[in-house]
Length: 253
Image 1 (spheres, helix red, strand yellow):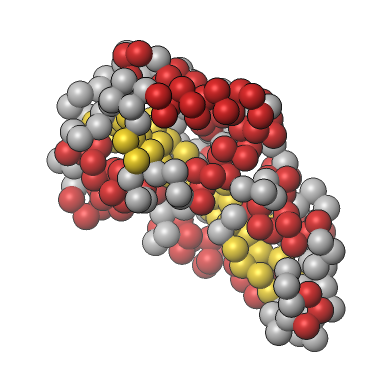
Image 2 (tube, helix red, strand yellow):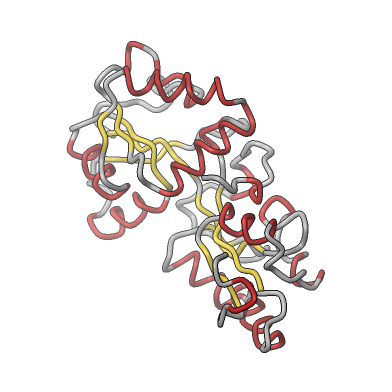
């Protein structure tokens, strides 16, 4: 954004669609070829054609498996965690970029007042703050708190390292709930790049079977190209029912 036409970059590959949306809105990104864009669902790419999602991460409620029966104890919406029954039982990592993007989406979709009311309600309900999602998942597994708001893949990594005895599990909300927002990493090409052809080849590689399989199997994120398996332990991406939000509009997250 500061370098503008003087940037030495040819490609931007970023974890947050809001940042990509900012670059798109500033006229810094070139339009991508339609055959590249069409490999990804319209909800996970730029509506202006300036960037394409490369992998996805879903928000979940991570809960203590000993304390919580997800079918009976968890609210149907993230809004329910402001209830008195959850006082001093919930954790969050408010400095996490995905959490901040969630708050921005909440504001854009449901309004400033609704977002402020939820944040104040959670805060006044005695929420515990953690520096990141890893420490939050650990705290839930230990029983320090009963539930928390995290990205799905943090638990996957703990289960791989520690096995099924690990004390936490994930719950996906769905139903176009504010807590069901699916965020993506993505890539775009700098307008006026001197290496446009090579830049296109790089973005094409990020959408290739090899890269998408890496994102799924090693990074534990959702692949965004059809035909790549996310793994048996995750619900299909098509089943997550996120709210209808243009991810490129999350520009002030």
